[in-house]
Image (cartoon, rainbow, N blue to C red; front, side):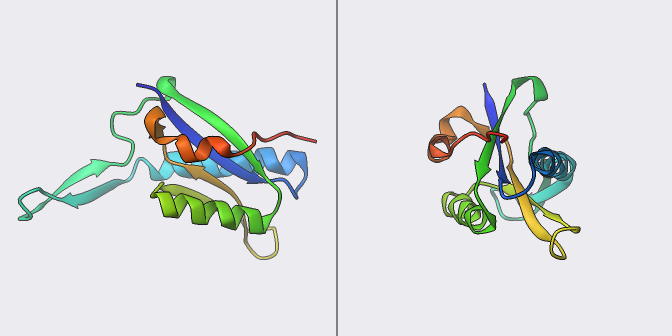
Length: 126
């Protein structure tokens, strides 16, 4: 099965920073996806560990870089992600206004779940 990760990055920063911020968010997603979480068992009498990306391999994951025009637009994207239940990691750049959000990476999703995300425009460096 194919999986897709979407990375949303602000375009009101320099092209070089857009690349770096996209990498930061993607790296943060990779690191955090290796953390073990727990969930209640079906019987409700215990918990079992799981990885967020269990069963997903890099060779079967496609990356889509999406450009958003500003901080406000990135916050709107986050609202959409939350509305549709997508899990994501946000990166806050400490050197930009004391920690502004610059990029968001969505945990890998199957090709059947990417519908709402296909409406966004690809990142174009200027």
